[in-house]
Length: 142
Length: 330
Image 1 (cartoon, each protein chain N blue to C red):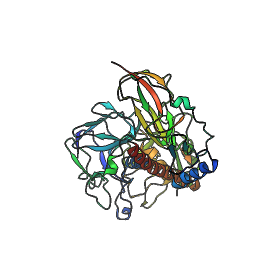
Image 2 (image 1 turned 60 degrees about the vertical axis):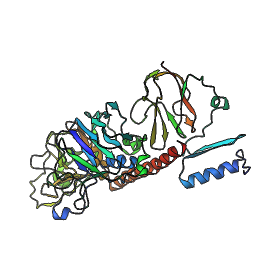
Image 3 (image 1 turned 120 degrees about the horizontal axis):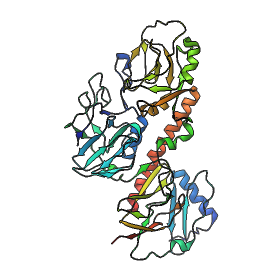
Image 4 (image 1 turned 60 degrees about the horizontal axis):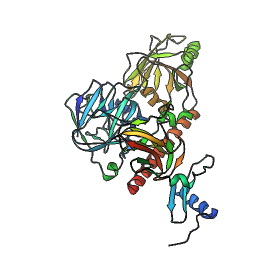
């Protein structure tokens, strides 16, 4: 396997240029020792990634995590059709749409995988998230 | 296939219409909200102009006789699949026997049921649109009735992979290019037309007055009600060509905006022409709602058109990219 150094700004610049040329919005590469995630957010200010601890947060076995289906902007509601809700719903039914991941003009609705209580909102509205990032933790109703 | 199990009158099969036959007196027809139709089609993986069901009287219910990917575009009418609420402009897989129902729209006036592959009726003069006035095209040249069944063009694996994606509301995506009034009236951009100046001071009033879309409005044209406007001297004109968007002023003084089923010719003086890029917004305006005309330039009209084209292209490219990514990661 090649030893590409993802901490090298030149490598990141090259990958970014390749993404732009290909019209792709982002990429994520994970290696045992290092990883890189590039999201093209044209015309936006730089995004500082969350800390490593966040990523490795332990989810109790009884909780169900809702993860990002792909990289994009996490939205707690459909900003194009509704105003921000007063507060987040806590009790959800299986299949309820509890948020979205926005990729350009496309919205990916996030359905609750189980009925129960949302015990943790991991991602903030507007945060850039990567594939597989936990977004919610749900404690299923027994 | 699709089976209609509940419908009001005037719900028809429409695509983007049959332009090019106006010279032989054939109305173009086509979706009243072409942007909604294109978005719905792109989302399910169709060509933007695939035929769909335009629903303008509610409630409307249909049964899917086989598994198919679909979306409801245009007006947000609280659609449900077997009673489960659906998101506006989001793709779903319907299983054989499932029932899609559309209720009264919460916003807008016309919804489009777009299915993977598109509705398959015999094209007439290059289009599957129903011409209600000509009684041809679409489903037997008439509006849908309970018990009608519609075939669908073959869907591919590409279509089937497309469930579970949605798109932002077009008015949100294009907000930089859409004028908004402070009193809730719809602002519709138009260019002055041939006989504009014959209306003297009344021409100015045409642009400042708030017009109401009267109940005598349909796919052919919107009759507006308000303080009448009249030419300074009576005009006698020969009939001339008319296209959707043309605003005519009959002797009564209340303007008529020609819409998708526009007459191909008319003799009333034309005061203005609604820009193409705003016709979809007019197509979603409800009877009884209010609008004002905003004087635009050709430059502005082209800019809006380009912004819409960019948005549609972005939806086409990104929806395909997202679909590919989701299916790789799944």
